[in-house]
Amino acid sequence: GSSQYIPTGELIFKMGKYSGEKKWRDGKSKVEEMLAKIMAKLEIYAAEEKIQKERNRIWHLNYEAELKRKEEIKQRRNEELEKFNKLLKLSEQYNKSLIIRKYIEAKKEKAQNENTLDQETQEWLNWANKKADWIDPLVNYEDELLNDDNK
Figure 1 (cartoon, rainbow, N blue to C red):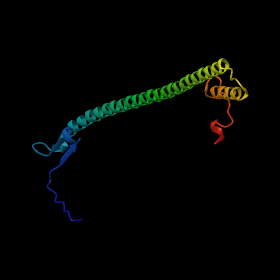
Figure 2: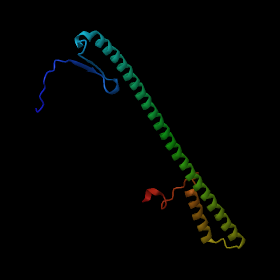
Figure 3: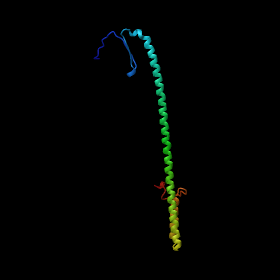
Figure 4: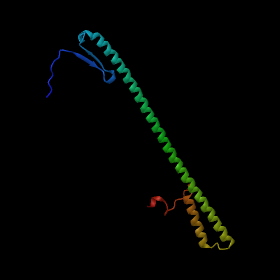
């Protein structure tokens, strides 16, 4: 609204942007006389633009494929770590069950050697064996008080 255009009688034709910008302006020759040259330049520019767009499209496809590949590797790594941690936990549980069983056996031998293997000790041995079976991932004994589903 506040600008006023005043004709100069000079025609300027401009294409492109930044460093690839090209201008034709009236001078010794009028722009109208350079139309064949301008059209040729426009065709070359359009062909270059098309090639650049195709390069960009291919780059983008490769970039997306690389992102997908990295995400798949990350996913597989996380799954592998999860499986390994589960293995570690199960092996630790198994090791604990062996320690408990070894202790139970030592307690039983001591009671037998001291001739103190009474009903109360036998009940404790049965109870302790059930707890060793409960923690042992190979036996996986269901304990009505210690299982997680009784919360």
